[in-house]
Image (cartoon, rainbow, N blue to C red):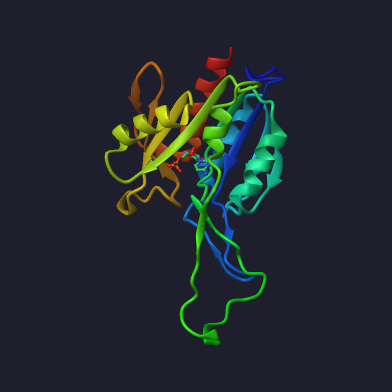
Length: 219
Ligand code: C5P
């Protein structure tokens, strides 16, 4: 058995959506299936990495051979990520909700209680930006995703700078692409060196290609 190129290297992958509770029975979520994140974790593990997989409530099962940490909300995901550090590389594939309901109700909101429920929102922590901005113990390689519907490369390039991550994988999630929740992905990798558009391929193939690049970057 030959050791893979990531043997002994600790890496982190976030994946899936987050669920932000409204009350004990309702939540706000998004359409992320967790398929791309799970594929990335599997591909990194296949190269020998010791993978911590922090996942929201995804619709695909987590891969085998990784340490799975299940969370529900963005705030729980941040805590799990912080607990997993230090790592050499971190891939933030989760579709984290931007907001949570401020003061979510401990009781079920009733329709007949008079009028519409009046929800107030508060911003969630930006997990990727926090880790990318760490002064001490920052992973050597921080990879973010940018799910965009318009001006994909421009927006993703700006996002890379704003978040302070090393690489951004941009994908076009317009409904007609079938990417969100689908088996394929069409990504553009944006690094400090430039912009690379990869052909449309299976999410598992995107994952293997990314894992190979990560191994080369950490070597
Ligand atoms: O800002 P936006 O949500 O488009 O950024 C997407 C990238 O940031 C993804 O890599 C996602 O995992 C990460 N992110 C995060 N925490 C948030 C929001 C996004 O880690 N609260």
